[in-house]
Image (cartoon, rainbow, N blue to C red; front, top):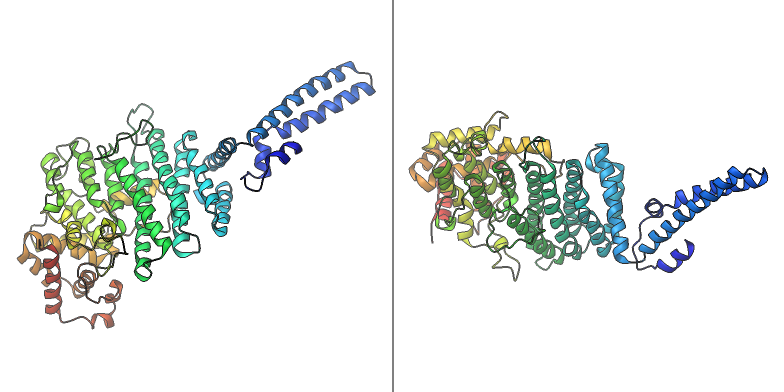
Length: 542
């Protein structure tokens, strides 16, 4: 064994720990069998016991077999492919032991040790080591045999994506780590989520896959990606040449687009290979709704594509209209399945549980508005035409009208009722938010990026109702503004100044809830007029 180590180990190769080496081969069995065999042979010779001598001879032959096996394992370590297979198997074994114990994911000592090893690589800035460890975790996905094992792998991959993004943006890790590690992480999330959907069944006799847990995991990854993208965009406002933020932006936008393409039942321009995950995209309406709700968080891109996917999964048919031209996805869904999904056996429970299509469209609209970035955002040089960094007013308008074209508020009374219900965020309310909260409580691991309720987004809630009325009933929109309490009116104005109007100085949105800050706002009639002008200007077609 010493000779093999001397021949195979070089400073340039990555090796497992010595204890992992011992566990990977039969070294302990070899030594124990050899010791017992030698002892039996010696005892038989001393006391002239032929039986002991025979046992010693047999054990000597057995220990030779163990020795040859250990030698063979060590020889396999000489090649990079052999080492990689063994390292993948060791990482998977640690994940499976953690899943079997049932300890919360990152608290289990096996995963904590694995995470510490990756943290050490991050601290050293070793990009190759980080990429290798990520690949070991990703490539073990086919070995998962239970849903718990797949869930633990997904939780670890999501944690690593967030951790690497934070390290590149806020610590000293080079942006090359994002380029090297994010693509395999996204690939692993897709593969493991598909594996989880295969391993999760409602009962033993059901033939259908349960996609809800997988959709929650994919949604959480999309939230992490959107949050990191928003952080990178903010950093690029102060330093447009920041290489880490640029590489994070590129890697994450490609990863997010890849997730959207694979969950789409019929993605345009994508040809799936035989071994690709999610070969048919989502088929469960609840899974599509859960995923879309998180796709709308943090100003995430491709929420419009997510609406098309929701329409196809809910109704079974693709929507071919263009929301940029004010074609309404929700109106088409209503035409096919009804306002509460009553004409669909698969969608009725979900749509009714979410409060109907009107509540769904308003809830998602408020979520998108809450995540819109500062309207004075300046795209980095070279990325002016990238949709993720677009300052085109038509793009901003489309983010609002993809929901606002659905006429579901009859007057200002209906708008005020919805605003009151949304801000209350009661657990008994039938809405997307409570469906999402329930699913995340059952399937998601705790995250440092918590899900915010609409009650924590009052400015966005008011704007969602106001834009809906302004799109269809402008006089009712003005009446709605006149009946708003002063804090809600001031909050909506500041939110609109920040996200909808360019070249205006806007204080941070939260500051208007203090009495001293509200005194800085103009008179109430001026607030109503300015807010209505901002909304009308954004909705106007150029």
